[in-house]
Image 1 (tube, rainbow, N blue to C red):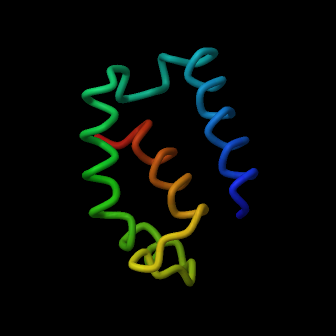
Image 2 (image 1 turned 90 degrees about the vertical axis):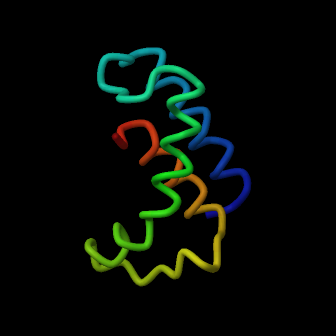
Length: 75
């Protein structure tokens, strides 16, 4: 994923939130930021459980967008 892809993915998340706020678990910035921190802590398990060969200790644009997507629904 490139930086441009990341920007487009963030814009897509914003559009999704505006169109479908009911499916977002974390609707306030405070809740969303808390979920980002918690999901970042757990993301390696997500990659391992889904068979993705990703090392979350070597972040790149893909991991950043995965964290933001996950934080939208993470409890």
